[in-house]
Length: 390
Image 1 (cartoon, rainbow, N blue to C red):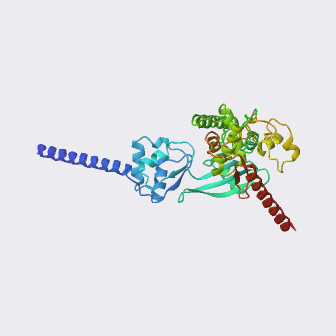
Image 2: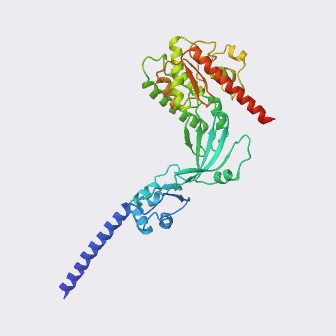
Image 3: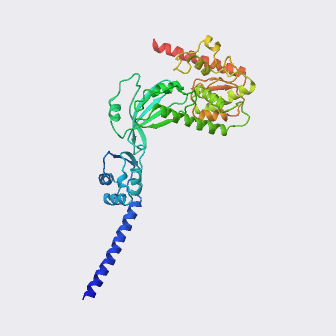
């Protein structure tokens, strides 16, 4: 009898082991399988949350098929104790394993509300926006100029939330002085700036920051980024350029940046300046004159006077030969690349064409005709503006 009982117990244990093994295999398969989420979502993980609570939230959102399997899988892979507070974008069809990795890896939040501090050439703005998980696009919630507008309620609300993301966006063509002044309005940053960085040394880009970061640390990131961009551009430069070193390429790129806001024109504008340098002609570009007047501290806000065009400053390319001694702004990647790889054209003249772009010319007669057309456009606009103001 005892032998029969022992046999039954062993049989039961073997079956139980097989069943347990099957359950484990099923659980592992479910944990790593494609998930049921039909559209990506933004998962909020509040500070102090537990993996059990997040597992339940994920099940309610339809992101996991079983909260229990998700929680057990997270425990088994030692993820439960690594849960990070924040807002995390969960992609469509993400497996439980992938979701566990997303919510435990840390770093900046990948969705939710974001405050963007935009430092532009003519003005700075603060934008509050929120990622729409369904479209993966940001939706603007508020925008204001900190120097002129009242602070909107939406900004105050998101600044009080722990999972709000922050970004500083630097426009191409801003000067170093403008960047430093703009950073003063970035209220999540700390510390003073000891001195304005050299002109052209900062890379215009969008930089993720965190509350408590210092302004000097952000400027150093911009410096390193610009050093990298300039080195890459110079390494891939075309042959036969009238540029002695990377710094001269940086100077030329800054002039290109200030001369055109049309991306497709950068190569043509660069070709005009390169052709002029090769022929020993003066660059005769207004932005260099303006820099000699303002020293990069703000916008001129009016047209240039004839006396300013004739004034001898280190940057006035109407009166000096070759390039000015320093950049006149902080150029972006595209202008750096255009400076060292200009289009191959015969152009040596260009003037505004009324569309936001420029009309290019090879001969002085062609250029004068383009200038005459531009003067006509200016006169028509002035007359229309006067009529509207009556």
